[in-house]
Each structure stands twice: as structure tokens, then as C-alpha cells.
Amino acid sequence: MSGDPLDVVGIGSMVVDRVHRAQRVIGADQKTILRELPDGGPVRAFTGGVVLNHLGWAAALGLRAGIFGRQADDENGRILRDAMDRAGIERDLVLDGSASSFAEIFVDDVGGRAIYVAPGATAETTPEQIRRDHASFIRRAARLTTEVSQLRLDTALEALRIARESGIPTVVDLDLPPSDALAQGLGDEATLFAVLAAADLLKPSRSAAREFASRAGADPGELARALRKRFGCEAVVVTDGEAGCAIDARDFTGFVPARPVKVTDTTGAGDAFLGGVLAALHQGLGWEAAGRLGNACGAACVERLGAFPDDAAGARARVQELYGDPLPIPSPQAARASTAHSSDADEALGVLDVAVEELARLRGRIDPRSFDRALSLVREALARGGRVHVTGVGKPEHVAHYTASLLASTGTPATFLHATEAIHGSAGQIVAGDVVIAISNSGETLELRQTVEAARAMGASVLGVTGAPRSWLAAKSDVWLDAGVAREGGGLGLAPRASVAAEILVLAAFAAALERGCDFTHSEYARRHPAGALGKKARDAQ
Image 1 (cartoon, rainbow, N blue to C red):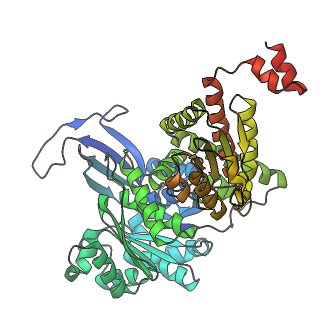
Image 2: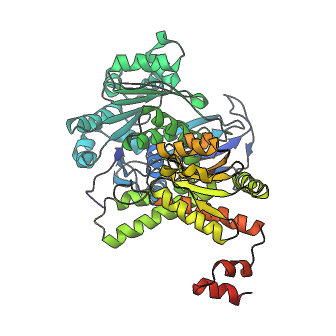
Image 3: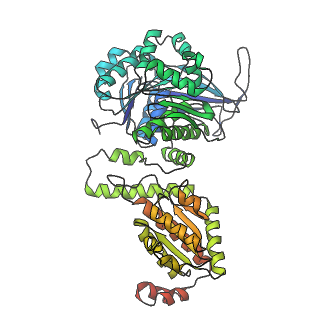
């Protein structure tokens, strides 16, 4: 909605990337044959550009994003504006440029590339135009981002000044080595230094950082510290390709390693990285988590051709998988809805939308082998005369009641184990060889930990159900099932909603597999349900 607050706005390159595939990137006076791309043909157009890319990834991770500046009313501009609209990126564009930006990109068989850019209207944007046409748009934002790539340095500096005047934190992506930026005519050295000093967060690549801090050597951590000291930024994050990133900030200094993935195209990896960092900082996740989320976005980006996340849901799901832990990151639809003056019914339906999306992501993430291991654990215990107990604390206690009842009614006798009373004598209901199903979204709840320890002391095995793969419960369980969600839904996003739905459905699915494995019949179901509509339905089906 026009005039609503935005989480981040940016100005800089927005480019149609024309991607070609070749065996290798060649030099001057050489010739090679272009390969066919997966969808056929030797060239394919993608949405791209440093700032548009990282805004796209930020939007895919739930931020309300906007872009401003100059374009032309031409075919490339229409392609880019359509992509912005699909991604939910609000635009404040003036279509008076000579041409919209495009790039010819040649990608080799190992993901390396050569990029030739025609910046067009981006490079034509002036400081006067920024203050006259876009100052009010900048002031709607919680954060401003810009780049050293195609935009004139004095134009970037004007945007940064407006943000600083309004108390808005700023980000600068140093996408080019300084010598290249100056050689390409973006401005003079003094303006370049002023742009970098105006950044609260400065994000250079290692090669760009080394030109400013050659004495620091090649170590990205030393480079980050040297640049932060030189320019006085709140934080400097130096990207180091597939290795990860180094961060130097007030409350965190360290290197955050990246997860290895198969590289298809490295174009835009640093842009995607910055989108992840912006999302993490907006959600208050801290610098180490910001580095991890940025690395996950960069890794998800290089696995495919093209730098912009056209499939936002797919990109978000892959980032979640690479990141590992559930994230409190809303979908773009939920983020946009949060600023709308909606009815109570819209709020309720929004919670359902969150739950449906989170469950779909969970379904795509679950490894079927984890169910196989969990089923084997319970079946082997039952075959030896063992029994099943189900426990949880807080809302998972109610899930445990339901699960014990569901199992018992579908052929797997089970009892509820009260987690707080278990450590005051009720653990005596457990005997050696039993299985305890322990449910906890965080996997860290103190009372549940004590109950699990008591169950183990009684000789039981543990099947954990948790939303946190790195939690205490996951580590201490013989087998654990993933029930993780990134968001709960609701205004505060705190009360267990989607996580409870995930726990219930994961365990309901588990119960269905146990039921199938014991050849449970309508007759046996009717014996357990002699009354009510379900009992009648079961008897009628015999």
C-alpha cells in the first residue's frame, strides 16, 4: 500500500541478464561454441542487477522491499518491472532513461563467468534527481541499501545522506574493486571514500577489500577489521566465495563458514548473500546468524542459473534447508499483509496461510529415512514386549495426550507420561525396553530434558519430535523426527500455532504408518470405538 513503511529500499543496478553457457570463458582473439541451456537455445534472459538481486532475496525471506531510481520505458525495463511486481518489490521509478540496463553473461562448466554490462539509466541517475524525486520514498524505509557497481558515486552518496539525515541505517555493497570503480568513471576517489564511510554496514568481496587494506594480507577477518577501522562503519562483512564470510562488528567478530553445494552459476552469489544478511538483521537474529543465513542464500543462488529468486517459495525453502535451524521469517505475502488494515477474518486466514506454507516446506524437507528409523525403533520395542509412552511440556503436553490416544486407538497401545511428574515418581511407569516419544519445539525445555534423562535411566529408548535439529533433544534421542517451522502465525508470532500443527501431523503420519504395519482392520477399530459415529462407520465397513 502506497505510503506504508518498508523494511528496506535500495538504489543501484537492476539488469536484464542475458546468460550464455560455454565450455570455458575465453580471452581476447579466441573463439568458442556456445552450449545449449537447459530450456533450449544458446541464450536465456534472467532478472538481475546487484541491488535488485539482493532486494529480491530479502523479499523472498519476508522483507517489505522497495527500489527506486531511473529506467527506460523499453522492453528490458518492462521485464524488470514485471519481476519486481511478482516478487512484491514496491517501485518508485522514473522512466526517463535512455535505456534500461542489460548484461551479457558467459558462464563456464564450473560456474565461473564473464560479465559485460550496459548500465544505461542506472548510470544516468543524478544526485539532484534523488533528492527531488525519491527522498520521501527513502524516508519510508527502515534501512537503505546501495552499491558501488553501476550507480554514480555522487548519486549513491546523496541517497546515503538522505537516509542518515532521517536516522535510517545504511548498507553499501562494494561489488567492484575500487580501481575498477574509478576506471569505469563512477566518480573520484574522495567520493568513493565518502560513500564507504557513510555505510553502517559495508559488504565487500575479499578481492575488493584487499585494495583498501593490502597490509592486512589475504585473511578475510583481518581485511574486515582493517576496513572497519579505516571507514568507521558499524560492521564490515567480507565475503570469501565458497569458503564463507568474515564479520567484524561491535558485538561479533569471526568467520562464518559456508556449506558446500554443487555450483552451476556463481553470478549474483554475493547479492543473494546480502539479501540474507538484510533479512537476518531485520529479524534481530544477530551477526553469526546473519552470516549463516547470507551463506545459505549465496549457496542456494549458485546451484542454479540466474541470480534473482523468481521462485520465491522454492528459494526460501532451499535457504531454510541450507541454514538448518527454523527461522522466524515470514513469507512475502504474510509480510505485506502485516502492514495492511485487515479485518479479524483476514488475520485468522493469515494464520492458516502461514501454517499451510510451513507444513508444505516441512513436507519437502523431511527425509523418509527418518520415519523408517523411527518405525523400526517402535516396532522392535513392541516385538520385545515393550510399551510406548508420550510426553511433552506446555503446548506439546496437549499434543502428547492426543498422540497417545491416537496410537492406542489405531493398534499401538500407548500411554501419556506427565513430564513434570515423571521426575517425581511417575517415571516408574517405564520399564526397560519401552520407548518414550518426547515432543518439544525448541528441544531445550528443562523439564523435558529431566524427563528424558529419567526415562533413559529406566532403560527406555527415546524418539524425539522437535523443530530444532541442533537441539539437546535431537542430540539425546535414539531417533528424532523433524517438526520444524520458521513461523507460528498471529500478530506476535510467538504463541505455538504452526509448530503445534506440525507436531500433530508428523505424529499422526507416524501413527498411520504404525497402523498400516500391524494390519489394523475395521473390526479392530470398531472394538476400540464401540460408540459414536466413528464406531458405527467402522462397523458398517466390516
